[in-house]
Length: 209
Image (cartoon, rainbow, N blue to C red):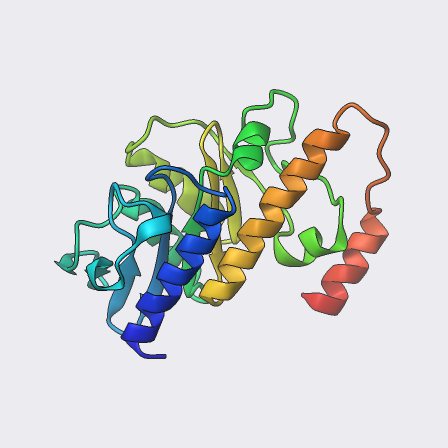
């Protein structure tokens, strides 16, 4: 895919996420791996109003070469890419329900959300919680890196999800599935719930990877 088309796709998905309330203000960021580095959304930019030509371009070693200054959370994206050779895109949002779940005191930090639906298992799988770090703290990248090799999605405590995908479409769809599952979890939280059994989860993983 050409760089021009990739820039257009980032812009299109960014607007879709913003218009549906999955990100707000200038929060959230998207990146895509290219043959010569990465394209990333700029810092302090609204995903609902991106200019394709101003999307940041970085070299493989993380140097900014063109476009506006990249997101200040660039280090989160690079941590995911460095641990996941198959990752072609990363989406990080401050989506409301996912953030709400990340603030709960009674979640399992090794696997935050239960297997509520088959599509969550197929698109997200196991979701570990990364401990809280202040915004911009570079040690957060080390915490993400420790988990990224085994998990393509992580949830940052009191912050939001970071999701890698084998394509931009896959990363966005997984992020959307995570947000909807977080919403379902909060709706069901005080109710006796029938989750998928370990056997059902294993069957899904065997069939769909």
